[in-house]
Structure formats: structure tokens, C-alpha cells
Length: 219
Image (cartoon, rainbow, N blue to C red; front, side, top):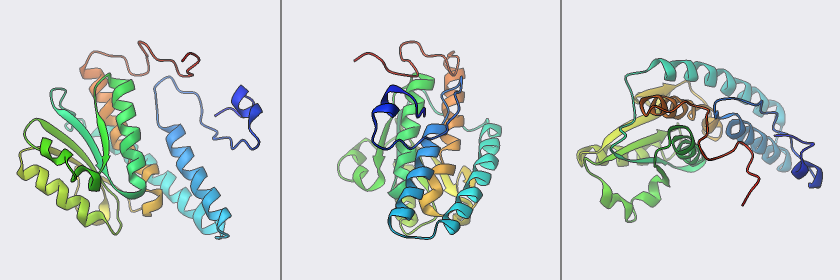
């Protein structure tokens, strides 16, 4: 985040994220990392940046809309008594992992993140009433596979919360259409709202760490 930090000064090449400091553990670093690394990938493979930058601006607008909608959907919450898992495939697996981090550091709760494909190879045995799964479904070639898993979990008695591209016509949280590679910029917003509400429900003040620090200095 800071090009002139000790780490930035030692780097051969420092790519500054430009994420502002925030009292609440937000998603700026995650979002900016996704966008910046995609831009680097496009440049490294000699793909025109103009189209990507236009799509990224569209994703930023979709994020603003989705963030407002997600915090307004106060009736959708995490169950503190359930075993919580975030499931996704492809680029959106980054959102599943970031969502897990937010539940842990913002709400002080336990959570896990897995590829929806990996979940079928053993972990699916935990499917049942004690499981709550947040399933992330961007618009792309594996959307039907992820939805198949979500429906199977519901049939097993698990509570499923879907975060989906509106073009799919389903989802507890539906975000505006966005390219699959940029979906993690947008579909992280509902998870941020869920983590925030979970913290408040647990009596925690979002943004106040009890043990961690915003910059880890001791190992």
C-alpha cells in the first residue's frame, strides 16, 4: 500500500496499490490488488489496455451499487452457530478467501474457503443443517457447476447464501453484470456487509482489533 515503506524501498519494482487507510478493515487492498494484477497480466501478454480499463471502471461503478445494496439487505445474516464456508471457482476464489479473512478479523468468527470443485472431494461430508455456505457465482463457464453444488447443499439441509451476477437470475445478493475476471472486484461487497453485521451481532466494534495489528511487525 505504501511505496516508500521498508518493503517498498527494498523491492526491485514496487507496484503501489493506492489503498487509503481505513478504520474499518475494508476490501480496498483486495480490490486494488485484483485490478492491478489483471492490468499487469494484460500488459504482459500484449493485450490492449484500453478495453480492460473501461471494463475496470464499469466494475468500480458496479461495486458502489453492490456495496450500498448489500448493506441495505439487513435481513441476510450469518449464523454464528453454523460451520461457515465460502465456496467459489476460478477468479472468484480470491473473494472466497478474502471473505474468510474478513469474518475472522472483523467478526472474530471461524470460517473456511474452498474451491467448489475441491469441496466435492471429501469436505462435502459436512453438508447438513449445521453448515452455512456462502456460494459465489459469477457469470462464466463454471456457474452451472457452482449452482449444482449450492442446490445439493440445500437438499442436504444446509443454509446457502448466494452472491451472483444478476444475469444468472438468482442470488440472495445480485450484482450488476461484470466480466468474470473482474468479478472479485464486485462480489466481495456482500461478504463485507455480512462480516460487518456479524461483528455487530457479536458485540464487537468493526475496525477495532483485539489482538492483530493493521501492520504485522512481530513474528
